[in-house]
Image 1: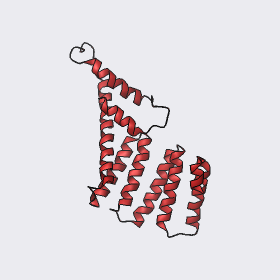
Image 2: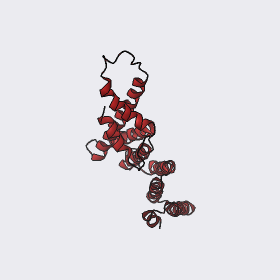
Image 3: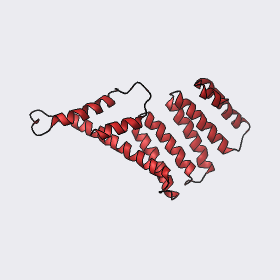
Image 4: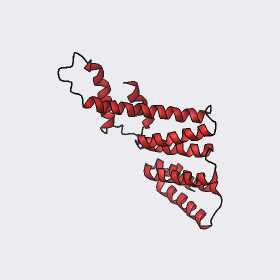
Length: 193
């Protein structure tokens, strides 16, 4: 029932349906861990689509907690959940936590000897993009503290100006009104520097 509500974009009713399913699973003391993981992931998707990113992360963390008991530490399912948590943090503009989750996902794929797997490569790409954005932000903060008085001849300020304004626009809340993924914004900020 939760899936139907979610497709109809009735996220409140979908969340109620999935929460009810989780409660019933706990009440009957279900040993089906995979089912519970799936329920929490479904609930996370509902919260994510309803723009409640904190609850989406909490549900994924609950799924991860169950998965860590059910699977061994190097199982790709664990890595997938860490990557999903990182994606939500990334959309929440929390780059540090996103990076932490992506690093855990990458480490899990590495231990599972899946370095040639596309999922590992995707996570490594996300790590590089987050690092690039963090470096851009760090450079912006450094540049913002530099005194440019009398130094225009030493520094081509016109080339710097466009990149600086783009980063300032992004940092100061000039985000697009639509729910555009930060992945696009990361690419935008990193290509202009």
